Image (cartoon, rainbow, N blue to C red; front, side, top):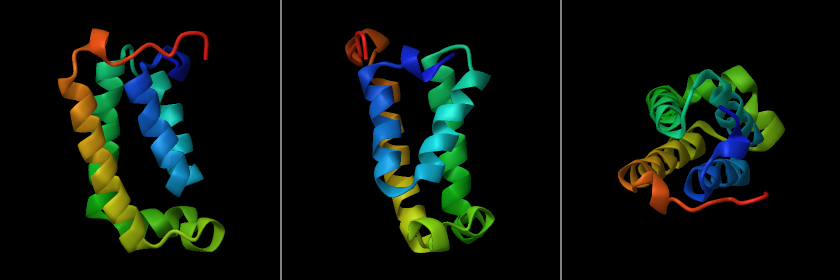
Length: 104
């Protein structure tokens, strides 16, 4: 799957990630290639976000985010939890109601 195939609601998750961390945005976008449909990607995104919430310090240190993006472990943990909740909202929305990105 490619991010070009995402619904508007799923795409918004990547847009939100970009507002805090280019690293997280890139990871979420790149992982779409591993999945065959949007719902699978959403589950994968949740797993990734859960891991960040569980180990925020390790995540920030791995990517040196504090130096390069000004992102601390506390910031990424809180943001990943917020993004996780957003993913949940997308998951409970029927695919046909998630919005079409059209020719974006």
